[in-house]
Amino acid sequence: MTISFEGRVAIVTGAGGGLGRAYALELARRGAKVVVNDLGGSRDGTGHSDAALKVVAEIEAAGGEAMSDGGSVTDYDHMVRMVEKAKERWGGVHILINNAGVLRDKSFAKMEMEDFRFVVDVHLNGSANCTKAVWETMREQAYGRILMTASSTGLYGNFGQANYGAAKLGLAGFAKTLALEGQKYNIHVNTIAPTAATRMTEDIFPPALLEKFRPELVAPAALYLVSQDAPTNAILGAGAGVFQAAYVTLTRGVALDEATPEAVAAHWAEITSRDGEIVPQSGAEQAMTIMQRLQGQ
Ligand code: NAI
Image (cartoon, rainbow, N blue to C red; front, side):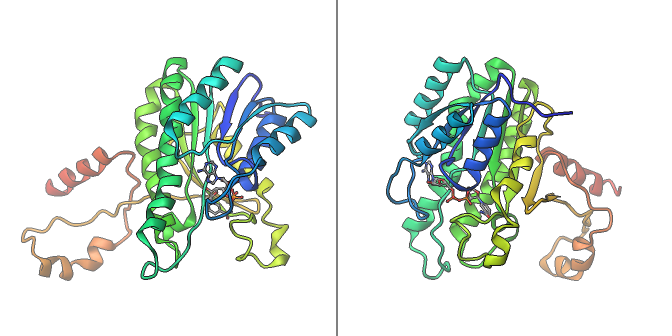
């Protein structure tokens, strides 16, 4: 079955290049009307350019419909106005892909707090700004598909990216609660952890791999996760045409009669054993498992 976005309005942040551009082009090719947001700065978030306008021109040249927005995701009032403009022109907003991002890599020892805060502000607060700006509209429509962009750094860590990792795992946590709150309004919220050759990773990828890690090979994951039949609450890794699911798991653990640090040390192997591990679907479900352990189950 073909996945179509005919009749859908999508906002893609940071869509002036890299992954966001690939998502915007493919959404438009499949019928969506797309708001291409990008302030067009450099990799570290400084400066401005007309990157968004260029992608709109590409979409229009291919026969699609799009509008550009050159505002920053860190500006909540601007994000509200962007959503209003999309609604005025196209009648609603059905899809939001929070993709805008910056890098300010340094080991934590050398990192200025300004660079920590800036990276968290763009990724985490920026995604919250855009999501808040569309949330009420999606609830009223009883339809919404939202994608957060995490990263392997957020899920598993990476040297020199403490600021980025904090923001990226924050986004996965943000998505998990929104997935629960959105469920009854038919708002599905998922997280993608992409791997692609873009300017963000240009100094990491050996030239031979650049072609294999084209952003276009991540776009299928993003598009599925914002489609009508998308799951909710998923974390999907995607890169070079390889697709993987990531989970936050919980071990069975142990109920200790004498809860002392020594007892925790003595039972470490049992506490961390992955036999019988589960994936709780909410925080409350973890609390339930504590009750079960207390009852000897
Ligand atoms: P990119 O640098 O090509 O794209 C990021 C875009 O966001 C840029 O066009 C930039 O101008 C825009 N942007 C930055 N700050 C903004 C702001 N305040 N408001 C609006 N737009 C802003 O890099 P790439 O790789 O396409 O990154 C896209 C997303 O994927 C980012 O969130 C990134 O952290 C994430 N990611 C990418 C990975 C990769 O392997 N390329 C790995 C893991 C995550």
